[in-house]
Length: 392
Image (cartoon, rainbow, N blue to C red; front, top):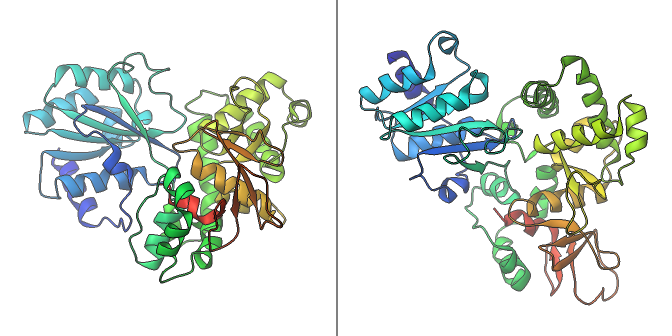
């Protein structure tokens, strides 16, 4: 136990977390069993440690961070560890890599029921369906999703200035005022291109080759988060990798399931299952007509975020594909994103706002349509694309 306390103290004292994630204020920390889901690389471990640092500090032994990937837990049970922690006065147990522990959901349920004074916050892969696939936890766990950096978070760090979050209504009703405030001392477009290339994943701050690091992360997502958690046979991994590559080089595009099934030598149903797994893993996004959803075939498949588009494609990434992917990714957190229903509209947001995403707009445009454009200034329904990166 003392070894875990020492590790906890060291990690908090050496924590580098220059951006305070907005999720920390959205969570109800009074709940006793909290799951933090997210794609590999978005900073779940840092998020847990930041919570411990901000609410407890490195010297407070009421809170403890542990990683279930530790060899200790190959022999000793989580329930016995939790019992000893509580006996020592522990109140908050932060558990990382929970899926690495066999029978983790039953152990968490036991701890929840047996130690009413204990709060557990654990991290898990975005592929995990905590309520649907874990009946032991369905009535007790509260789940949240941690995403990669928004453009606002990236800009706050890069420009060393704290920018506020704006709602979609704020942006639609006051785009000129907000744009002027953000652009007062800088030009956001000077930072935007870099964000689209490497700003979504916090590990861009590390002194390593970002593209190579991202490729390794993508492969780890496939090998561990998809194959291991979804219990897919290892021999099918090459098919998943090939499918992801073909989606990446063509996205956003209408989905030809028959062609993909021939290409990776599997059934149409398996192709759809695999695409769903890739979407759960935050590697792709599926776009549907309003009122439709999986298992129906989507109208288009997008990469989950723009950073994923660059290391995979052997040629230059299409600028329009980047624009649409960014918009989808930023709106997807708190809004319903569907295929546009107006002529020339790319997206329908929350069933009522039609958006066209483009480089520029010639002429007056279509009445009732919003335009997200590559520009710094806003004018009525013509809004800078980058401004939608301030939604979280």
